[in-house]
Image (cartoon, rainbow, N blue to C red):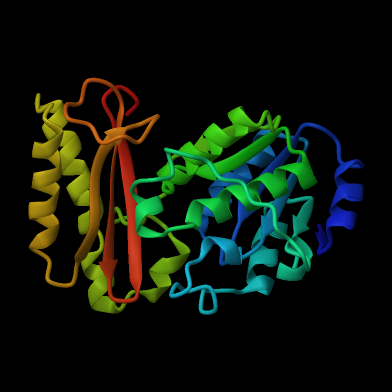
Amino acid sequence: MNVITTVAEMVAARDRLPRLLGLVPTMGYLHEGHMTLVRQARADCRSVVASIFVNPTQFGPHEDFASYPRDMERDLAMLRNEGVDVVFAPTVEEMYPPGFSTYVNVERITEALEGARRPGHFRGVATIVTKLFTIVRPDKSYFGQKDGQQVAVIKRMTADLALGTEIVVAPTLREPDGLAMSSRNVYLTPAERAAAPMLYRALCRAREMYRGGVRDAKALRDEMMRMISAEPLARVEYISVADAETLQEATTVERPVMVSLAVRFGRATLIDNIIIGGME
C-alpha cells in the first residue's frame, strides 16, 4: 500500500493505477462503516484510493477541528488489511497552500438542516470533495448514507459540474443497538452512549407510522420530538421530514422523503436519517 502526502505524487500515481479506480474519501479515525465503503470499492474496482484528511474548512470556529479524533497508524493498518492500493493523506498546507481563495458553493440544497446549523460547512465539504475528485479522478466515489445531506450535496455538485465520477452510496452501518457508526461517538459518556440509540428508534417510529398510513409530515416530526424530548440527556438541534432530492421540508409524504435529525448529547451532536416513501 502506497501512502502519498502530496498532490503531485497523487497525480502521478493515479495515472499508473489500473482502471476502474474507486475513491473512498474519509477524515480518518476509521470504523466499520468506512470499511464497508472500502470493501464495496474493492469489489467494484481494480484500484482503490482512500483519502485521510481532516478538512478545516468544513469546521466552524467553535467546532471540534483541533480535537477531532485522529489515529493515522491505526487507520493505515485497517486500510492495508482491506487491500487499499493508495492512501492519500495530505497536510492542510498541501491542500490549502498560501493564497488559496477558490471555493465551491452549492446553493439551495445546503441552506437547511446541517447547512443552517453549521454555516459554511458545505462550502468546505464541496470544495474539498471537488479537489479530491480533480486530483484522483476516480471512476467511482463512495459515501455513506448516514451523512444524508452531504450525499445529496455531492450528487448535485457532481452532476452540475460534470465531475465525471459515479457517486455510490452505501447504507448506514449501525451498532447492534441501532446507533449509527460515527467517529464522533467516541465523545459520548457511558450514560450518553446508552441513551443515543433512541435516535434510530425515533426514525423507525416515523417509518412505522408511514407504513401504517400516516402521510402528514408534521405528525411524524411531532412524534419523533415527543420521543426524544423524553430523554433528559438529549437536546434536539433539528427534526426534519424533507423531500429526498431537494431537502425542502415536506407537508405530506407523497414521494420519497429523508427523515433526519440532529441531537446533541454533551460534546457530541449526532446525526442520522432514513428514507421513506418509496426508497426504503
